[in-house]
Amino acid sequence: MSIDDNFMDPMDDVLADNLVEVLATMTKDQREKFVKTFVSKWPILASQVSFNIDCTLQEVVSVN
Image (tube, rainbow, N blue to C red; front, side, top):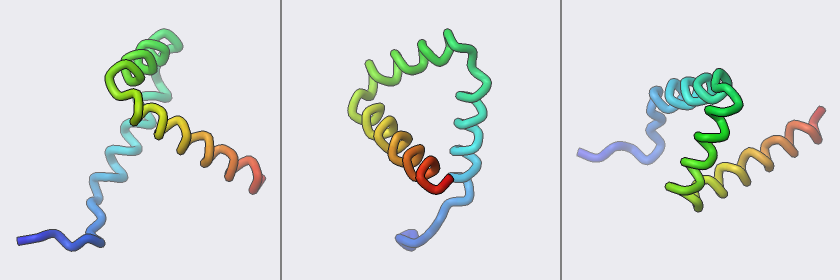
């Protein structure tokens, strides 16, 4: 049995929302530790996420 390529897992939104809330409620020290750990363990992914955030911020700024 294969899953349709167009299938959208409803848990994706829940996971994204939970991750955002965890990051938003971290202290400055916790965020700094998170960033250092993320970059040291997953440098390419950290760079991609940073780039995506920057692009999305630019889109938001240009719309407003």
